[in-house]
Length: 375
Image (cartoon, rainbow, N blue to C red; front, side):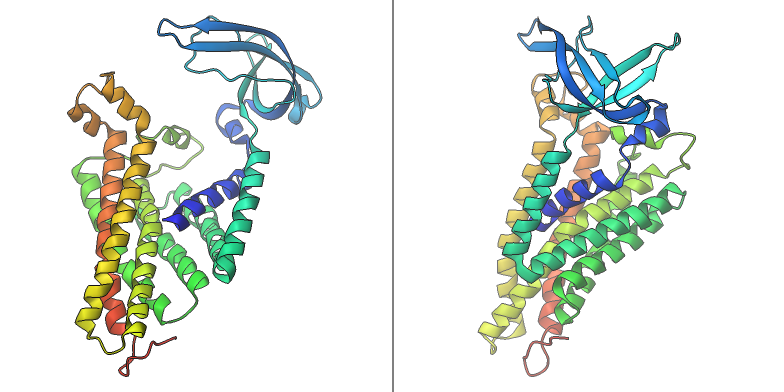
């Protein structure tokens, strides 16, 4: 689970720098550039009826790029519109601004977000150092595997899906390639790695079939997330969003399946080495006992992660805010139902991986003399 969390952080960092930042130009024709806040021109505070206090600002900026580089820009953030939240800016802040022109060719400037590169760079450098120092050779190999996995997603999976290929076919192929990179680069080309590959491959097949069954049974369209809006346009091939959801479920489950499979195989090896005379049945039972403790911890972690991600929706349910007025409405909301299917199918695949990996390790990891096979 830790490896999965770390991989999410690393992949997010890499994607942030590899994908061009001016994606908005392909959608809106607005120019998106970085700018530095030079001064706050005006500021006012609004108090809502519920007691919330928001601050609106008019901000002067200097453009740092694009066709307006060096020019002074003005963001008029003070308005009569009651926004959900407001950001406070100060001189020296680096932000992204969107520059558009109205029908009279007047320039309209919007601050879209802060530039977070500096913080992300520091965090990723710290991440690499900690993983490398504590993980040693395995840590560095794991980082290499994550980079290769990311490139497979960016350069193989994404282009083929955008070109119109079916994600149901491309997704599993990419998943197997990512799995091979994660297993063989991190753990080496040996018997344990082969068993892990076989265990996870079998579990992935079951997970994929369950995902396909319940995505269709619950009639999930795969279009519940806001990001889908940006994938619908004349410049993008028609996408199979349901297939995209299935591919996302399989790739998302890969991390925890890898975790439990490697853990079980290692447990079997250590138990056998510490007690070479025990029967395979007893070895299986002992390894399963260890696995159940590990499994319980992972399930709790997954559950809390999903609860944390869905906390705003839980609050809407508690205050009886539409459309979350009843438990039935909550679970039938497609975004919630998608996460339920994703989470429960992933946990089922996780549970099945444990006995599969344990059985294969007990019967295939050792030779007839009871010695661990290294290759």
